[in-house]
Length: 430
Ligand SMILES: NC(=O)c1ccc[n+]([C@@H]2O[C@H](COP(=O)([O-])OP(=O)(O)OC[C@H]3O[C@@H](n4cnc5c(N)ncnc54)[C@H](OP(=O)(O)O)[C@@H]3O)[C@@H](O)[C@H]2O)c1
Image 1 (cartoon, rainbow, N blue to C red):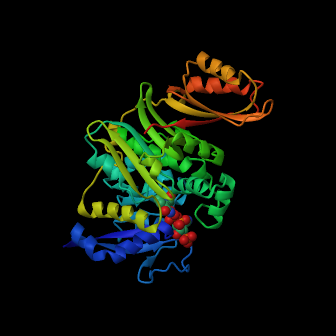
Image 2 (tube, protein in one colour):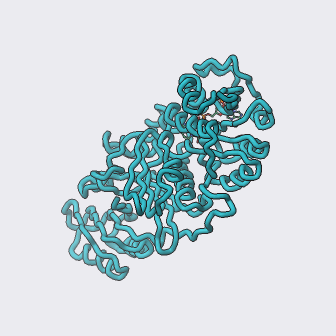
Image 3 (cartoon, helix red, strand yellow):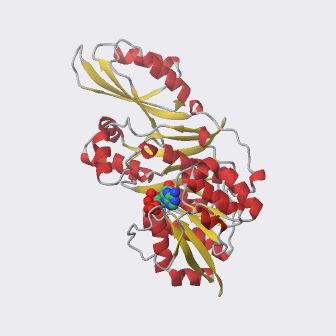
């Protein structure tokens, strides 16, 4: 056996502790599979005296994680602090500059600064690995870069935020509205004290930008992701979705279009019977569509100490074995400058819920606007009958251009018969 790979873990929260736990409990298996030991040399966190339920007394404590970057006893720095700026970024930069390989689960950092960091890694010959940054325990990065490497990808769609999927599942199962379920999730610790990164779709966008970069060998383009979160999803829309054979999920979708790659994060109606439609609670799932392989579906736990630690340790094991990949599949200079399309260019089917005055000719007024915009109606449901009062009208369309749909919605909202802002949800036939 060769000399051990010596690592420093910066951050001992959920993922840092989970990583340490796996390295300790699976030490023998890891050594057998890598041909060398993985030895944790030192750890760092904010509070040295916090009881973490794991014995760290024999490990060197670093008050300042930045010291790990220059410590000759450490070969690999495992960054488990989080955040796209500040200490996490400084630590990863300094470590890579010093030639130390870095393993991180930090999707915000990779989505925003992955290219600068990949350049530093190339320059010093270090490895930058981030399997745990997307979908926790699901090895989707390795799958895109390795097992599915021979494919051209037409679409990748995923449920990549467990908090959102938990909230949407609970809304439907408990027949409660968003605000109530979110408050409950926060009280139980299933959602962060500031849940905006999750519920506003930003966390999913970070992960999607990373998957896009691996699938198309381009730089992560977080600024090119169209983002809508789940705050406006209502139980009423879930009920109509069920009637139409759909379930509402927050998806991150990247797909090739005529105008370039389109990256989007928004609530979608997906067929209840589809694999993505069946993923409930905190689970994550990603469906990849490749020209040779067809559809491949991955499902598993997207967060938590064990699943995320499993991916972090797998990256460390790759480094121990000497299995080295470019962070974004190719050297930075060879990455493609691909065109990105705007959501206006999306071709999709749509669900539209209107509150309208119940009187003759309402549907005709709405469909006249659809006709002007070249949108073809697929189905409609009118709920209630109360002449002169408000009733609900639910429409679905065949595939239409998003820009046309947006224009139609703006025109419909101005009709005298329309009592409230229309609700639109895209239907993803997947
Ligand atoms: N949680 C998950 O399931 C999950 C899943 C996938 C990816 N991730 C990513 O993994 C990373 C870590 O997430 P987490 O959930 O484990 O976070 P966490 O539980 O909040 O833990 C963060 C850790 O960083 C330490 N820390 C914060 N500021 C520090 C500083 N200035 N110097 C030294 N240590 C510092 C904290 O110290 P104290 O403990 O002393 O406060 C804590 O141990 C993030 O990038 C996150 O996006 C998390």
